[in-house]
Length: 525
Figure (cartoon, rainbow, N blue to C red):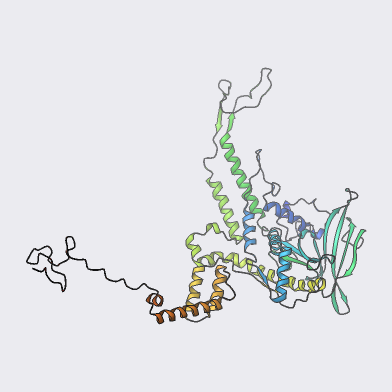
């Protein structure tokens, strides 16, 4: 049996029936299905017409429902969500400069996204000693179809060498195609493990065998400078599986059901089109021209069809409802999302979203499938940044001693109001310092607080005390209490017409109704 034998189960058995076996014949047979699957899974992700072999008797293009995009995009979003890379001191400065210059995070997340589709993604650390100081070390992503590792036959987790391979066209003769290979391998120098690199062009035939024919030498095999001792090619697996040297596409296992979903949608589309145009039956002969030649039936609005006397011509009764189609398609889609543990945010209502426990329960399947991938991703990135310090020492003469930390954030959004209430309770009970409280609030709301905030608060408190002391010393009520003093009482108006305020002004007597409310004397006689 060979790897192409359908009786042999491989990670690519599900997608292999959709692959054209005539592609990528230059690739070694052991890797051919892997390389072909990368392109096929991309076709499925992008809903390409050639992704599936759909039956369609109409002249229209088949219908593709892009479920794989939802599954892939959601998985990629939550895998290593909130990734942060940091250090301290000189290492932090060098790290920030490198990540900004090389746009590391955008490159990494782009490679990760495509890796969820294909099953693998690769990043490559390189250096150019001829570049200006501070810019010599670089990083880029590599198409996993170029990645050909050589494993220890007794331990597939142990890599002995890595080949980065691609086809190139001879610029002097465009009809000639060669293989460009960059090779890294481990060697022992005394008792120390070292890494060599070698780069050349080869003829396509037998490029992976000992009988390969070199046509152009770019760089002979040389040792990478000290202290580099690790091959600078970093392979990340999506859905790693014990015993498999490569990852698995997020679409793996759903090829058949996605084909049926697309086929059902195409059938429904064709049925609706036929129902609109109609299908007709007749026992009449076909129409003819004046010379007796048969003509096609022409059924268009406003046209009258003539038929021989006594013949039948009627419209065939079509489907009365598409609900069975839609119910069947919805059932398949729901099961596909559920089995893929895809978090469907559009199915979450406001009540569930506001309840942290209910939301966490809904998210649990996605959390479960990504947990081991997060561990693997953080581990690989930690190794990458450890090796990066060696490359900085070798090519930039920078000794970076501080540890580089790789951390990921929460996958679900935090209820900021709930967390703020917890922080307020802690500081009110004097369980935490105000400095720690401010740091937490600043992180929660992404605030930038000045470094001398404590000194500013102390200065403000001293200034307030000084103002109070001055106010009390001067008897200034307004300055001491922050309130306006009470207003003086209004003056009592003089007696006269319109100004009578006596308590018997409505009752004429000996005073003429001019008695005062308190302590006033009557009118003199």
